[in-house]
Amino acid sequence: MEPEIIKIPLPSLFSFDECIWFLDRNLDDCMHVVAGNRVRKLLYEQEPLLLEISADDTYLKIEILSGKCSDPGFVTRHIEEWFDLNRNIAPFYKLLKKDKALTPLCARYKGFRIVGIPDLFEALCWCIMGQQINLDFAYRIKRRFVERYGTSITYEGKSYYLFPRPETIEVLTVEELRLLQLTTRKAEYITGIAREFSSGRLSREALTALPTEPDMLEQLLSIRGIGEWTANYTLMKSLRAMNCIPYGDVGVNNALFQIKGIHQKNNRLLVDEVFNNFEGWKTYLVFYLWRSLRNKEE
DNA sequence: CCCCAGGGCCATA
DNA sequence: TATGGCCATGGG
Image 1: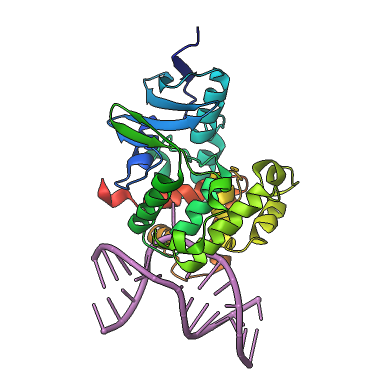
Image 2 (image 1 turned 30 degrees about the vertical axis):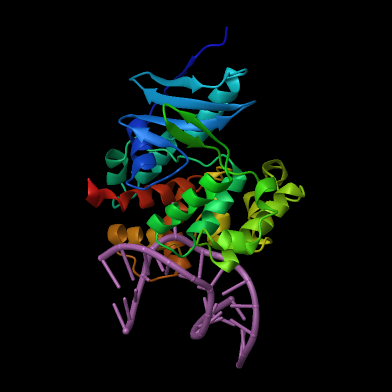
């Protein structure tokens, strides 16, 4: 008899409320549904599994609402990966506390961890979709894309989606994708990336086999449509590279201006001056800076 | 009407 | 290597 509920003990310095905050943010993300302090997400194992995730003081609780789970370990590993549970972030807090201006982030966002995008293809497509447009619009395009080309199940009258597979996307024409209000360029980028996957030239395995983060960055940058921002963002969210800085990012620049008074745009030296003290945790600093931008809403 | 938004490509010098 | 035009749409 397969267990219907999986429990994962919570690590210290982990806040499920921060996960929920991140997943909910008033943005219409089609890849999960948040209701109160629970989140539902469709995961593909041997068949689509609808998960409902909640937490108490000691455990993360994963309930399988729909689908037959043949390997609970697969689900556990996926959730650990999604919420970055297998990481001791205490050293990061130690570094934050060495910087007076950044110290308040420790208490303000205690236990905030980077919610990942384990699917590499999804991460890359999402970056392309979001390039240079406002987030609301980007999420609208993603929803159209996923609802049109992704597999879904219905549970209690509501639909839940898996992100489309490269094999589905590579055969699409630019005109079809233009209907979703992707630009011609972005449509080309996305089908091109889909072809990289289905041809086997690009995969999570191939990328993680490379020895260093700069090697992975270089590999991604060689693909049309993937620039510095997209490559770094993807390495952070999907492969959990720990020393990425998406130079030129508007949010990072704004946060560094608010917190440290750095106002020069595209000034790598001043940005590096802050980040050089965060060796091994640069990626986390980026997400804490982004997190700080949303403070006004609360 | 203008500027910007979680960019990137391409041409030009 | 640096800079500017371009893409396309929505919101302030």
